[in-house]
Length: 396
Ligand code: ATP
Ligand code: MG
Image (cartoon, rainbow, N blue to C red):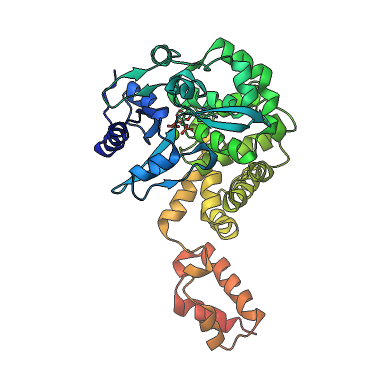
């Protein structure tokens, strides 16, 4: 049984609903995590109450789940999502249910959920509802669809990526029939909105088993984003990348570029609707990774000047993770630690100083660039008087 108990504010919501005669349960991920002895990220409640009845019971509560009827309840500084029991039907585009119906029955609500381990509910007094054998699957370490896998993936193709994501997160295997259905229904993932694919992939990349994203490729789940799949055996491991979304995305995207699966890492990130900054950094880091990384401190400084700190660090980290570039990352770290100048901002003179010397227009910018290039090679000479005399002397 669960070794983790819900916090007081969660019990308060459960008990308040029940006090009004509405059966209410913890459900989904939080029950799974409690049974595993892991503290849940968030606490979801399902109830027989309808949205307007939930709103009435909790002052300040707001409908946040649109047609799903989810109401976000605020208790002090905490929020809890409360959703009426519901069933779905008439799935359109292998993703969107055309019909959402509120029902009075917990079992019906649990049956619309994706995997047995996510289809359990727990009452405030500790009674577990587990109609599909989720607790046994948790013990065996298996991700298994609720109901017939082919049909569940036809209804919502995102569940195939979710199956891989949960297997990566929990270190579970995927049930044989569920896996067969993934192989068969993989092409349906082409119907999914890229934003949804991105969310699942990012969560997958941040689990202890990020290489599951490579498995998603082998299974054909990402075919609509690729010219071709990755070769079967590649030496690079995504698990060697630092556990940060940006590095994992860039490492992943660059591998796809390197093996000719996508036109460019930036295009892939863009196609998955990553934010503009990540696409930009991915494009720059990939360009750095496609050539030998800078070797000397001065080379790194010029690279930092050209591409910025973040793209340079990402490129170095990805190169290290994939066993490329020897200890060039060390040189970069030494540069950053030294505090040496590699940008105009750090230069000991400014444009105003040069104008005071009589320089005007383009000459100011050109002189600043010249001085920066100079101090990159002679970091100890980033001194105002010295640079001003250099600038004054080179004026003609
Ligand atoms: P995590 O801790 O990663 O958030 P979670 O189980 O809470 O895990 P969510 O994506 O937040 O995952 O979904 C909450 C619950 O809603 C799931 O546990 C599952 O019961 C149900 N669910 C979510 N997405 C689907 C889906 N596409 N099909 C069926 N059920 C789903
Ligand atoms: Mg969740």
